[in-house]
Image 1 (spheres, rainbow, N blue to C red):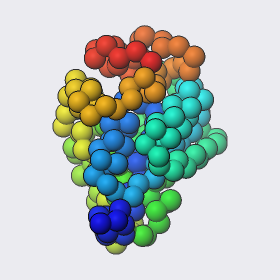
Image 2 (cartoon, rainbow, N blue to C red):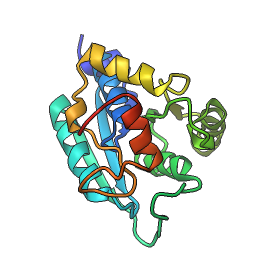
Image 3 (cartoon, rainbow, N blue to C red):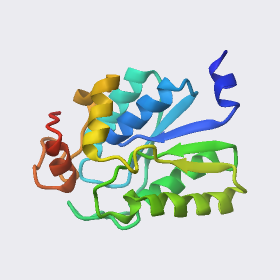
Length: 192
């Protein structure tokens, strides 16, 4: 059976940040045999250069195409929450798929207080995608109810290349050690 027969012509697009969670999602989608592509979005984040490099290495590791988008004109705060970030990224991904049947994948997990890392967010995003695309697109966040430790255990069990990932929100040359992503990453003892 070919990959296109497995997914029935549905396009699978992974939002690939270069971090642990999106790498785990890519692994899961690739293991299912889906014909997937990924997209990295540079929205002006401080660590964009390092994240892009990691996203490229991860996509090469899995042999999937990576689209690289740059959104200009935004001024994200250094180390602070970017209100609506995941919603923005989902809609950017939707614009790439247009109204063709597709699934957008987002690597988020439980245990944070960010609204856009919750089951409610995924449900609301799916309502928007259904409305905008006549139900042609949907959002999946397979780890939304998992802890970071659960995602890390998945990565170890399935051979996700953790050494290729990056998670710091503030710096691109070394981990700051204080942003939520660094604290999250340290909680499972991952080193880049």
